[in-house]
Image (cartoon, rainbow, N blue to C red):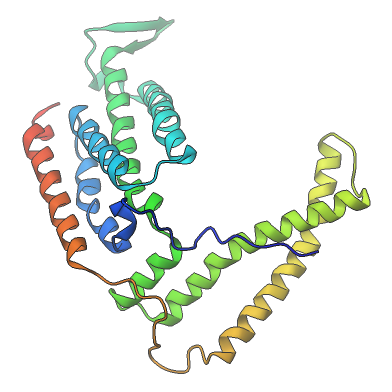
Length: 270
């Protein structure tokens, strides 16, 4: 039984979407200062401004699909509401504004200030996640590894070992699908209920481990055949260069981040 294994880490190209053409390190370096500063803000406007900036960049520079739409339109707002409500329950009532009382149950009271603190914290986390999406949505693991080897001078023995590990993930998914189909054809571990499901998953473990060992041996032999680790450096087949546009993107993003932080100056608010 054979099938084509689709590599989810293959290089993505989308004409007219500039984020895919940037170096992954540029998309990481640009939002990192803003992520660090967002840890210390306490207002609503600053994280909302960064979320709006990231959504605008993704709207212009990324290819929108169902996954990205679900993340930004459904998952992110739902996470803000759930985290905001949960953190408002944990807020110290003696350190929040008690002028507005929302709920009183026995000796416990939920104040409006606690909800405000919880939502502000959730918005900070959501803005940090949105900043991380700039690189996470438009970059692949292999390109990030190649960039760290080529620009940050990470030893290729470490980088390409991580790259080989990235390649294991889609292979495991493919082999698990093959094992499931084979068990289904043979009628093994049929039935419903938790015991049947546990028996099915237990039956997947041994063939999946055997396939993993075979794949690891093939990868090791291929790396040995290419003299992996024999020399201090190697010729790169796929180049991920740092171009002038990467520098421009990082500088412009830093300028926008400073403008947002300076404009709202959230540290004066309590």
